[in-house]
Amino acid sequence: MSLELFYELLLALLALAAASWSVAVRDSYSATVGFVSYGLLMALVWMQLQAVDVALTEAAIGSGLTGLLLLGAAARLRATEARVTARPSRGLRAVAALACAGLSAALAATVLSLPQSTPSLAGAAIAALPATGLGNPVNGVLMAFRAFDTLLEKVVLVLSLVGVWSLAPDLGWSGRPRLLHPFADDGVLRFLARTLPPLGLLFGLHLMWNGADEPGGAFQGATVLAAMWLLVLMAGLGDAPQVRARWLRVAAIAGPATFLSVGLAGMGIAGAFLAYPEAHAKSLILFVEVPMMLTVALVLALLVAGPPEPTPDR
Image (cartoon, rainbow, N blue to C red):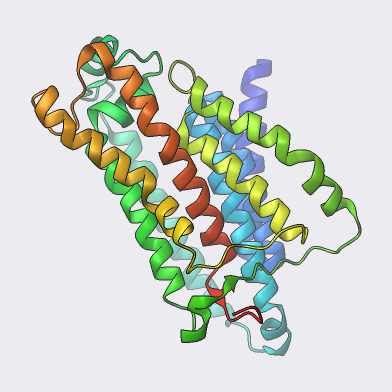
């Protein structure tokens, strides 16, 4: 057995073990820890498949921000879980296990039944990539060949923030989100919140700028910026802004608004909606990605922070 095959088998077993643990464990905090571990292992799996962009997204979203969101939910549910004594019966758990196993078997059979040579537009996308001025094919697909989907994804992200804010009481609309977390205030969190953000800011900007030609992009960079801001909030070194602040609402729509404006301009200068003139394609894409990165970072952090609550400074 080669060393690479041994590594892949070990990685697969660890991923299955982490997934099984997160499903089988009883308390939500332990399940969240298992889920975060599973996300990190899946990032390694994507790296092994040479899908670096997907690995970055999995580590940042699937394990990072989603894990933080679930940890906050687990902290809120801790008191409720302590009072709950009833557990699902063994029969119900057996049925759930069989249903999961059946679904997994069906997915595996579907994947294995696919033809070896599946239809793909990858060749056509690579051939047309030089017209965008980008060297990263993933970014080229997202910002040029399926730009309309990318635009709608950002709009949905903003709408999801509005949905979270709508859960607030009436007086909360003049307040701030209050981030609850289960971490002890032992000084380590504050130390990290003072030292990591400058490095995280540079790394996030590097991911966005480097994404034009190498793995990375605005979304991955935005996730790093959101994580740095959340670290400061969790350490108590800053407060989330009031949701009634005008600058906050403008910043929340700046990315999609800039993207839409460039797309509409493309109708006049390039002959189609969301089209770029070939001579300025890369510059326009970077022009869109900067405000889009800031909007995504802001929205992701506020989604994790949760709905606003009434504050004394109302």
